[in-house]
Length: 224
Image (cartoon, rainbow, N blue to C red; front, side):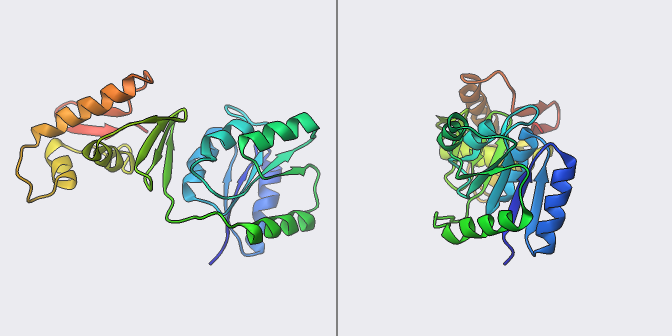
């Protein structure tokens, strides 16, 4: 099976060069040009991440902090300069190594291979989604807002899972009830509205963003 590499850099020439090089070497390559895009691409659960530190909207250190507890792969920072203080920040954020620009592609691949060989973290069937400041860890069935865990009951998480994995798609109460409670369950679809009210209440205690939108006369959807 091909190893998956996520390349994150806001310099298009570097991204193109690395993508072409590692694709030719047989890797499956994902790319991102910003911090927020990196979070979305991290949902592909790469085997290794090359992460530029200086980027728009969210720097590499913050990206690393956001994903470290949920994405177990090695993270190698790309940087034009490095001092001891910068190394401390990077390792504290959860990084595994530094690659200083300009670099040799041959040496870079050798270091990547070494990290992949040493990779002994338990991967399991990790699946995670980053939605703004919200992190949804489907494997652990937990929700985090800026790394603070938000407790949800089983059916509450089931609803979050259904809507967030189908972001933008509208589900009416009856369909949510069938998918979460099952076709043979005794009950009423009106319970869906109460569960969504509780989910919103728990989220609103931490953020002003509305993740579950009401589409009047139609149902509910997870905001993109």
